[in-house]
Each structure stands twice: as C-alpha cells, then as structure tokens.
Amino acid sequence: DTAVSQTPKYLVTQMGNDKSIKCEQNLGHDTMYWYKQDSKKFLKIMFSYNNKELIINETVPNRFSPKSPDKAHLNLHINSLELGDSAVYFCASSQGTGVFHGYTFGSGTRLTVV
Amino acid sequence: AQTVTQSQPEMSVQEAETVTLSCTYDTSESDYYLFWYKQPPSRQMILVIRQEAYKQQNATENRFSVNFQKAAKSFSLKISDSQLGDAAMYFCAYRTINQGGKLIFGQGTELSVKP
Image 1 (cartoon, each protein chain N blue to C red):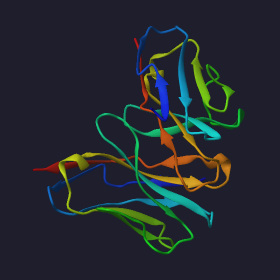
Image 2 (image 1 turned 180 degrees about the horizontal axis):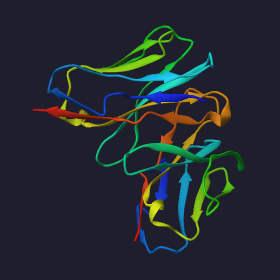
Image 3 (image 1 turned 45 degrees about the vertical axis):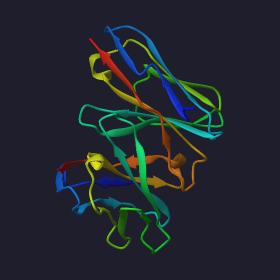
C-alpha cells in the first residue's frame, strides 16, 4: 500500500494546456509539500500545506495553484503550460512542520511540455 | 536564508570500498535537522540517514554514517562496504524547524560504484 502516491507518473502535453497532478498520502501526516526537480536534478520547494492551510508559497508563477481538499490530499494545477515547466514534480508529506522525521516522498511526476 | 552546498558533482567508488560525500550548509539557526536522501535511477527519494543538530553523537544506519561538525557546518556521509545498489544521486538536506519545516537541498552528488 503506497504511502504517498502521485498520479500520473508521466505527463506529456502541449504548450498552453492546463494540467493537474494529484497526490494522496495514507500516513496520517499533517503536512504536505510540492517540490520541483529541474533538469539538473536540483530540488526546490514550491508549496506546503499544514492541515489544509497554505503555509509555504515560494516564488512560483501564479499559473501554479495548489489545492488541499483535506489533509490527505494535495493537488497541483498548472495553467497555460510553458516549455520551462518541464520537470519532475514531487509530492511529499511529513508528520508536522518542525519534526525530526523528514519527508516521505511520492515517486514523482515527469511533466514534459512540447 | 539557509543554503546547502555539495561540492562534488560526481564521485566514484570501487565495490566493497568506502566513500565519503561532502556537504556544507549555512544557517544562523541553532536548532535544525540534517538529512541525506538517495535517488536511484527509479527517481524515488529514499531517506538514508538523519541527524538532529543538538545531538553531538554522529548518526549511523548500518553501512551509512555521518560526520557532523556543527561549528564547521559540515555534514558528510560515509558509505562503507559500497555495493552496486548504492549507485545513485545523493542529496544533502537541511530542515528548518521554523519556516514551515521546509527541506532545503544541496545540488546532489552522483555516486557510481565500480564492480
């Protein structure tokens, strides 16, 4: 039973389209995150929700909008996709914001914009 | 702002040998957490080892151990008896206790293991 699951695993789409990536965790964690891994493998935080409340919103274009319907789900919607949005997007969860346990990551979604 | 630096983009080790991956960080905080994550070609992020800043004792997990030097802001990972399955990208990460507990990653070190 996957702890943090993301769908889809691969997404190929044309420029200008709108797409969503879904994330669900069954660990009972309070906090969820979205990270972007670029072509050089660098990982950078985008958003974080704690109990459905947005607590981290890094300098991300407003074409990216997260949504957390409940604390087990955190979705990422991207409008008007651009070539530069091509990356691997990771969802992660943790038991809280200031705890020792680190994150549990999903397997990532490889987004390719053509 | 906190930063994490991994100065070795690539490292190579012979199977059964020992290798050390370097990591330095910059912070003004006194309490925080440090982690090493492994990312094999499957791209899954796997937690390797973790360290609390207030603990002086270095963490150990089987063949993996760290050398944590708080004053020098250094957090290196030692892999003993390297195995082919250790080949992966390794990321050092710093977790703030404040700022929403975000994890700040280094650039990564690509480790190859030669048979």
